[in-house]
Image (tube, one colour):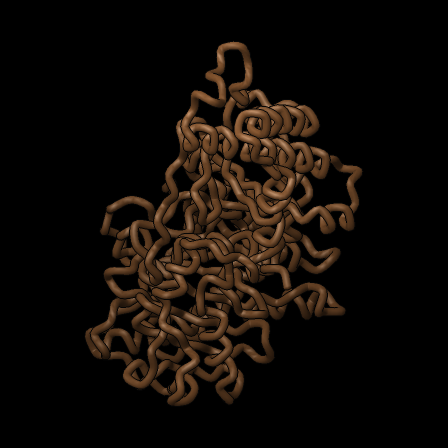
Length: 508
């Protein structure tokens, strides 16, 4: 199932630390190419070495000949994949042709994080996808030109000439067609670098989704995650709807301050978390527009959260889905608050407290995961929590008013749960959450046909205010100081008519 579209596709910067240790960054060759597979391969050669200035084969060592063979095979595989990829990026190519080809193209265009452009990520808008696919075509052709790649037939002819020379010199046949076919089955390489953007092209069994991804980095990451399928039973949960009255020294507000976060670094989107070392301003709980299947990863903002929290963009490289499902399967009523008994259960590394509130059905449920000091994203202790929201899907509703009511209820639910956590945090000596950083959920592919994005943003704002008013009426204060709307370049919240007296522009 596709991930709910938030207001921000991913950005590229990796956190300094995260709830799961980050995977090591791979180094790039001088040519701008780094291999994405587990086997180190040589940088492509610019020629076979069979010209007039080449050293005769009978005067070369076996290692030199083997190096030339590998370089030519690398060149042939990459040239073939690039030629095929450029053709598949054409707008006239069918989905069936793309599927049959077995190629995957992932583009990282800072500050956007990795996006699968072939096969196209369904959560990316058509305009954005066209922009990224055009960029992919430019990068592929530029790489082809810079490495002096001819077409596949000419390169194969070049390899055959070398094979003939080897056979004439040593009498041994080089079955290069078999080697080439074997390499094409599972090959991945990266063009560019992380600072200026890159493209990863993958073929064969290594392409086609996260379930078959077996890179060394992913395996290292999986080993660092504490598995949830323990023999001593399911996640230990307890219903905790009555945290009691707030402590006497717990001072709240009548209504949080509202502000808009602009786009950063000439991008279209606001930051999920703070990327500097400033510690003033209170702790941040950032809202993730998740998915009804409860995974972390997939597409758009959910993918970026996965990248910033785990160091990997792939949902199968973390255990949040299993963890969420175990919590959600707890048999509680709507509006029930459940907390994880950490003394009984090993959970996600770096998460030291989890709390959950059911919204009714699958949509509207909210999870809050609070990080310990060592796993706050980017090493900034303000980046304290993820608020995982299960957004209502527009295609599940027949009437617009019911869809918008569900969006409003979900927004209210996340505020009420944050308030409830802060009451418990003060009593338990945990870090309180001062700021709720809010993205537009139930937009993009989750938006109901005929409903505007502005109506969704307005419903989110109304739900937040309703939740705050309810908590103020119940406890005399709201234990949440600020609401930061991720406005971005598209002004997804400020354009929705939210009162300027309530929200002031904040430049980050």
